[in-house]
Amino acid sequence: MQSSSARARWVIGNWKMNGSLASNAALLEVLTAAPRPRPGCSIGVCVPSPYLNQAQRLLGATHVVLGAQDVSEHESGAFTGQVSAAMLREFGGRLVLVGHSERRQHNAETSEVVAAKARTAFAHGLTPVICVGETLLDRESGAAEATVSAQLAPCASLVRDAGTSLVFAYEPVWAIGTGKTATPGEAQAMHAFIREEIASFSPNARDTSILYGGSVKSSNAQALFSQVDIDGGLIGGASLVAADFLAIAAAL
Ligand code: 13P
Image (cartoon, rainbow, N blue to C red; front, side, top):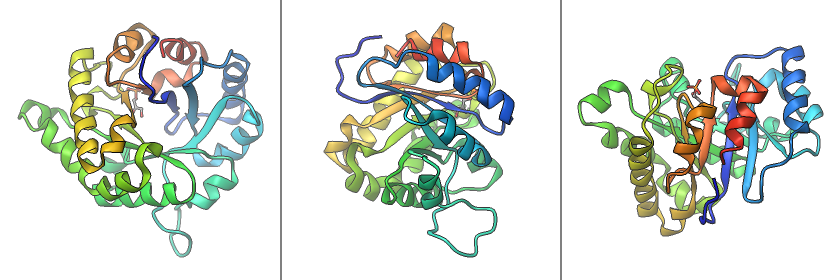
């Protein structure tokens, strides 16, 4: 979908805890062989950390941007199991997801920790993809905007410092892996709200990319990506199937 906006447009795959050396190689071979997206549009893959080395090797200098799914807020030291921003950079990482709802839920990440992770990632030259989104309970009780606003608030100083070097992703928890997608209108309304929130932190941030995630498929990507405040997608399940991921990217 052609857009008049100057904002960077992205389709980013979040592989979550999926993959194997063999399946990754097959998937990345198809993605790297496909034509690069039109100017202003990019595709990326956020792989599990053990596969960064393989992905770095296979992606090389291709147009497919490499990312990770989490990063420590700490620089280095006694943080068993954590992965630092410097390590991600050494393995060719350029993007990193922070605050995915699965980490907020299963790893008790607070919005303050998420903001600290994004700050560390930014300081190391990574682009943090800051994920926010409400639960079904929040939405049904009329608290969707308040929830998202509270998730964004600790990022205010980072937004002021980083301007458009960040990426946000709106992923309503009730739409992740459920087959339920926010309607293009529902997604657009929340994206417009997020844009106003981050612009209230810093007017320059109005041109920050905001991606939609949650059951994006080739059949609904175009309708979502053509909304004025939706700058692309963060794709879970469909990013594991090369043809599906490329079809979604074609809707950028
Ligand atoms: P699905 O596309 O599988 O719903 O996952 C979305 C997501 O969580 C991407 O980060």
